Length: 182
Image (tube, rainbow, N blue to C red; front, side):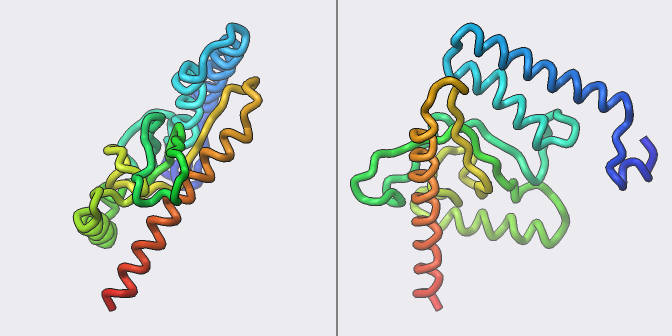
């Protein structure tokens, strides 16, 4: 691909064909899983994970980059960030920023600040979850998925709301801590 094509995002015909094949594969699995009544975990690995890969990574192939995603179906929020008497709710995927991705001197300073902040927090995480792959990677977007025919959109909304409430509580506590330090 020429430098002009790379700079202006012009996609080659062969890459368009690859992308079409990738999308057709996702559609195949969505149809297959829908037709067989597959469980939610199968949708996560065969459909949602693939869609995120195709959406986030330039060529649909995972690699170390500034933005990435993690499947985090078993990640819970840290109890101290939950509002009182609320059950823990989990999400399926998180799109995150990887501060360790090297973008130069200014970015290295940001990565060092994230590491330093994590070391001062009781759970050593920049997020409201202590899920290890996310501890040093600030969450940008949290995603909860349901099977298309599950009819559980209210459940998904509650899960996201509880997850975000914990994240906002953590950010509020960080701001309070910073204000009291000055």
